[in-house]
Length: 354
Image 1 (cartoon, rainbow, N blue to C red):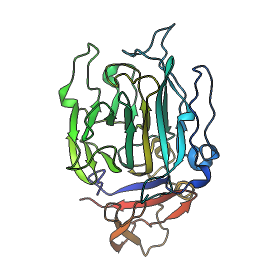
Image 2 (image 1 turned 30 degrees about the vertical axis):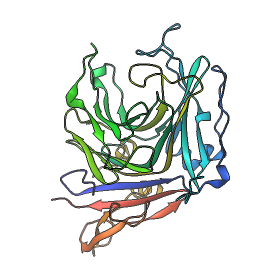
Image 3 (image 1 turned 135 degrees about the vertical axis):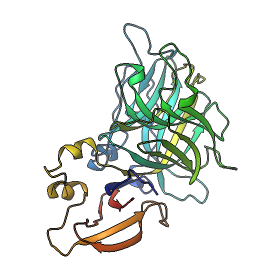
Image 4 (image 1 turned 180 degrees about the vertical axis):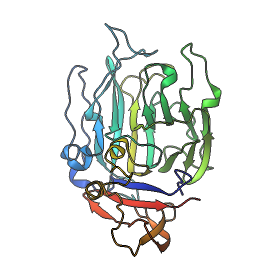
């Protein structure tokens, strides 16, 4: 269970489901021209369901003039063409479809994929059911991110799968993991081992719990790493990417090689976002209009009290569901509401931690 703080707190819950999107499935041909701007691969990525939560990126690593950022040796261009819904052709497939992020080495450049959350989050438990396949020389990641003017100001908690690494190894980091001079910061990172018999080209539930004092990582429910050093403190975006730039971190991908991160679902429990915090009423309670729009909780006006509910997503039988662990009445507590909006399921978690 995710405990975001040591006091009564409201948490929000969201589930992004890519398992039953057959109407949007199709694998686009790679864009061969580095200067061509590509559109999204299906109407799903123009829908409110997508746009309300995520933003597909199209930036490149081109620096000033002809230089590239960092120690990159290959021009890398993020393209909406590399994010698409794909039919699941696995034997005994557990889903009809999944979301694919592709990175591919083409003549003259590396085509990559990234999408970022529209909102920021202040502490989060994020899980995804995903696998990684394909060529050596790619980095596949999900992470929290808050940039800074200086490297030391960056706040970031990472899950990174390097396709050149053994298939049971995953990198977990509270960034930055190196200094401006290029020196490593060993306390900031762990090269973790997946549970016995699990490899990253299997379907694995990868999980990051970012809490005020530490970042903790899990694979299929088993803790694999925990870092207190430079735990992020401020609201941050969630970013997913699939990339390579020929540099020392990702390594170099061979011409016409490709790697893929395939995602069935993303599950998040989080504290209120920065945008939501700014919309709070004077006495610190969420406005009822905000609750109706975003699925937040509102205090009941009656004097009889409301439900105190303790819920878990870890104890639920299926992904995307919650399980009520306990429920009792108490005055001035909070009501619990659920509803479904298109392919995104919003719900509310209320916990008491004394």
